[in-house]
Image (cartoon, helix red, strand yellow):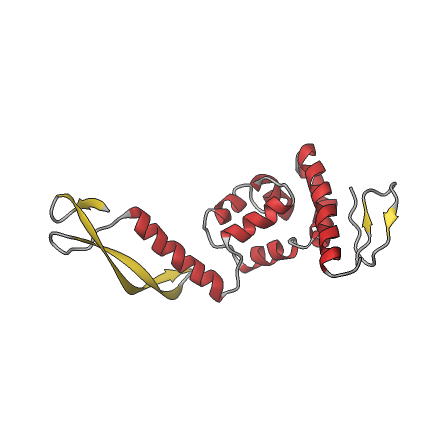
Length: 185
């Protein structure tokens, strides 16, 4: 890897070293193993954006792990499980339109937002919100959400080894009796 050394004033080979460093994440000290870039000519530290971004991402992930917060990939997985855009998922949850995009790009969510996203990972919990707020998402996404909630509820019932949910496609359609969950269109 090559980079510009501010001390040498020229492009140089970069030497990579491992070290411990402490980052402040939401006011808390998080110590992680980091990669440090040094100039091969003068030995001074060199800032390389990709390496620094990776170190910061590692610190954020360590914070998430410590506080049992969802990762950006987990948040994206929950959203995609129901076929929702970032904006529609945010609206359904009562968040600002850009909030989910920020979380999926690495910003750390607060505990309340995290808990709500964890809850809607279960189809029956998303269904409760969806019934109240589906008007705020486009009709095509509503079709996708309905189909995916039904499929996800069936998969949960199957994974538990027996039908354990009540799945209803709409209030006028036949109801399959499975216990305590209803999924409507």
